Length: 268
Image (cartoon, rainbow, N blue to C red; front, side):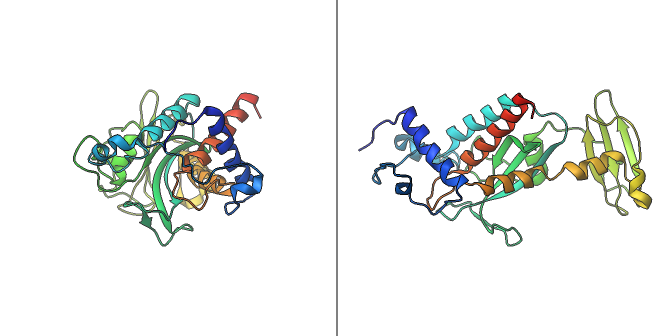
């Protein structure tokens, strides 16, 4: 039997999950909270009548609609400014999923890879790495460059800034436009690190970098590039994840985003 749920029921369920997270109770039974919860009830965001058709279009058929709504809301409530970081995160997951990954050098070795664009620990954009998609509008390249260009506006880069052109070790190159500056730094010969900044507008070299002659933009980036790693740690600290096949990643991120917005509004 299937019946609609209510907003109050959803709030009660999510509230219990968050409470379990604050108590680090991923293995706690719902009955521990003295709340009457029918074990025969399940929460689903998937409409079974159209599931077969959607499976032929993309691999995220069961979660695509709610995921798109979530990302749209995240982008609406806090505008990105300086120190925006794009990185990947492996979300722990052991359920049945054809695009689950095994990455041995991660602290979580099995899970779902998610690309995240974050500003000071606030998730502004994300894309789930869903493997090779069926032919259609969702079939896209999973190459790193293409993922970056989908999550941020792609800049046009002159050949002179790219790593293919031989450069002196520890040399810098600067490209100035009205609102942004492109920096190219060579940590070694024939290799370049590119940074595009709307925050820095000069060719200042950080004196603390010594003989490596790093531009201030590079050292500033190194101090702020860990945002996605911090998002991963903070989501895991009070995770609502439980021993189920549910997609609870969004609840962890929603709590963190809400916390960041609250702090911004209260100026604390």
